[in-house]
Image (cartoon, rainbow, N blue to C red):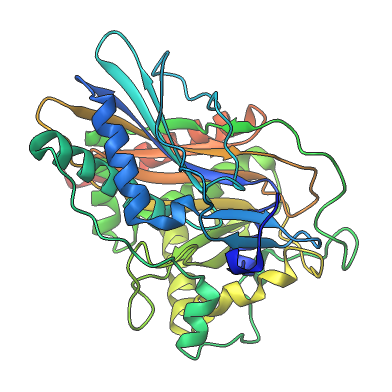
Length: 422
């Protein structure tokens, strides 16, 4: 693709660069019940593109493979795709998802029974969970405004910046600890390049397997956390570690999890003002010390509290070149990844329209061979409409077993606590 020097916004920083090789798009998807106005949704997406021009920016790769963020091209942006199909499926879009064209796409699938699926895909280099949820919420807000009033008011925002830039503005520098020491291991070949040659493969969509607690079960878990002064995230992470310890049989288990820094930086950052504004934290323990869920959750929480107090999490992203890319000297391969995106907001919708389910999906637009750090299993945790959801990514049946074990663990402990206080 041809581009001019004047098109360049900037070269991506390491926190953004790691999503370039596979052209990873993070997706937010909902099923819809009721009459969906596809034309109004198209207008809402066009407004979203005007309000957040990062969605129509482009990413190309330099000669060394580095990602370069470019301003929008001269061609008309790709609008919402509308097709007919099965809303229970989340397929790879029939049209091309190309980061060299634009960085945000909207796929709408309609059915004849007043059901639909709407999925927003945004390139992960320019949007993490907090940013993507904000964009999705704005989309539904614009849609509701258009249906109810026939117009949308939306002013254009500046391009979001990287976490590295925001840290530099606040005088935060790299410290002696990455925060990942508990799960760090030597790479297979010290200093090895984090990718191997190979032609891009066709686009692939990863739809995590899900296990959901109902609202009553979710409320019990929340109450269990409150009663023992631990976080729900700590409880879920502890349950994941306990389940994995049983199934894997290893003497030691560890996990890595992102921490949203938007409210932890001073001054705080708006959801849409940064690209990937998450630090990293890690926890590891001997399997023999995972017997008590509450104690384990408390130790996980204390570890995070200490790393936050010491400023380790804030600067953890400055260590990413040691773990990803051609200069890597460490690996965290084989770890458990646990991402808790918290409570998903109730999206605005016109009367008679229900957004009744919510999923996180990932699309690799042009995946290529890589030998970067691979998690043993990846878990996503979020709550939508009062239901705690655990979702797992992986290519074998172990992920399904782990999800079953984790939900059983949470239900057993919360039910036991409720019975003890009855």
